[in-house]
Image (cartoon, rainbow, N blue to C red; front, side):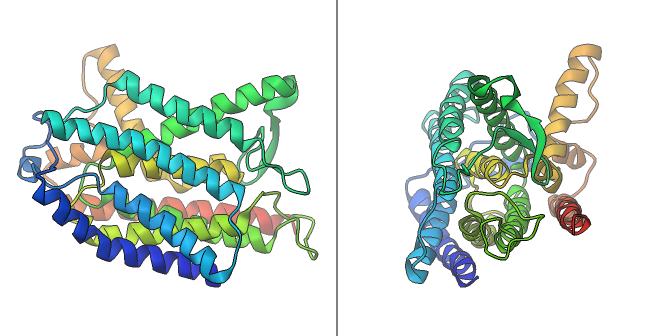
Length: 360
């Protein structure tokens, strides 16, 4: 438990005090955000705000996690290392995207096909490695079984071991692409995605602690214990991400002095996907991260509806821009969306505990 608290505290401190230094660095070099011309008119004043703040989020997370482990003498484990790799890999793709926007002075960065290819390469690497690194009990970070609150009976390896690996890699890539794009779409108002991510990873810190306390490898394990590779280390890492997001939110809240950019959005989305896979809670994550799912669905519905009927369902997508067009203030939208994020997370946590209690 001390390691969990330390990780969050270190990451929060580094993010809180490191972000203004990064803002100064970016401002001196005029590395600012470019705003799409067809977006809400109120956003034009944000042109030039420093972006790529995700660099601070990623570094604070890694240093918080490593620092906590070093101070407490804990070993780092495969599950957390895989998520860190996923964050860094996707964050690098986002960084390239942000850099292109800045260098070419336009709101569109890396072309969609290159971004998808990059996400695919990172996702395939993660998927393949997640089924390796078995512990002494043969448990790997990932599982070919589709998971809800824990692994279900739907095993992708039912068609053979090789087919199971292939299907798992495809499934993992779907989750990684979906979550990274969902967070990216949500990152459209000051502090919106950062605050929602902070709530999500705060909850997953509790999930990791709970799974660790009810871990099947404990000598006093109960019949309803959790088969997870490294729950303790996952709790430490989730706490580090929560702390990093907390510190960054101080500078990212309205009026934002820095944006996380694709660097941070893709990294956080990848972390959500990674946690859902290695903690065996893939479907539960969609409930706890319900705000991100709702925002992504609003874009899917808008595009599909327009192609079929030539009419728009929303005044503008993603959903938060629809409410801006209705005249809602940015602070009102962000606050109410945070409330929705909190309710979704609370519902997920309720399901998580109820399932465990029902099996006693």
